[in-house]
Length: 167
Length: 183
Image (tube, rainbow over all chains, first blue to last red; front, side, top):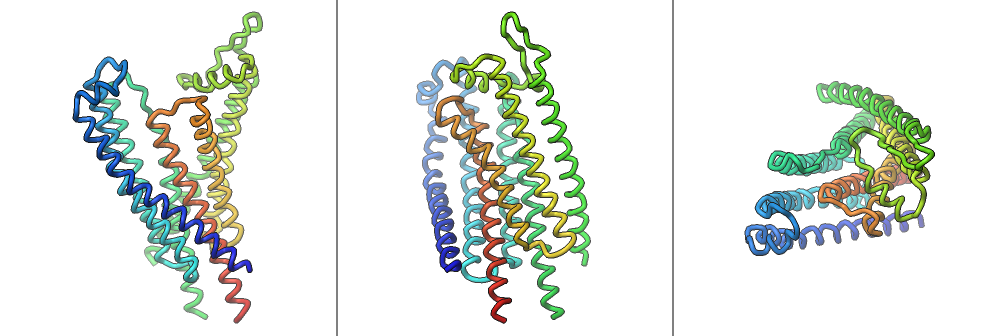
């Protein structure tokens, strides 16, 4: 009975992740279109509103939407790995080396996303020193902690393998 | 073997970093509570307060919330101070959970129910402020900037990963116990 409820849970989580993956994929052409729009001065002007420097506004939007085009594939990698981890639960023992590796890969993609975010922030800051962009250390801490957790997982699986080897 | 030594070095460094972060969060919470709840800069004749927790920090959006809720400046100030103190205490709790997980690895098998609970707690601690922010944006109390949204996405993703990992831990442990029971 407990087993069945757990399997249902896994199915729900897998479903949510699959939905997120599909939405993420659908988001790409949308973002690409918006990115292309930033090259059209007429459209930029109509969206800029009361912004004084329309040209700068266009540059900044271009940087942000361009970053989104890099971040979406990275998010795809992270989401599919996460789904793979969840799927191992239904199949067999989830405490396997592959899951540790997947977790490390998720940590790397999150690191890349944070780096892209930082790069865009720095670009906008250098372009316009008056802008109030600030980078937060919270996301950096999250990434670092994910690496540590991946290591915990890896260490745990290795420890167990050793234990089973000696039995 | 080399990998093992490397792991232990990493866990040692992580432990020190986590203890430092935890201490920093507790100190921040104390400082914020101190400045927030002892109104040294409060002018009783005008009811005005020039409250800034950290010099240069922007609390205008939180003040707008207070305005919408139609509370006095002093009440608003206490609310903001309470929220911020709570946030830093939550962060300290988060690092404490992480520290306990790392410590458990150094001692024995990390795949335990206690660690699953800790992971879930960490997940909720990350998700709670993110959900609070998101609800503020949806209710129109504050308007998000692109960096706010980015931050929200990263934190929600991180919280999701932690909660899923907690679930994986729980299932793995239950499976293992079933297996050991049948053998």
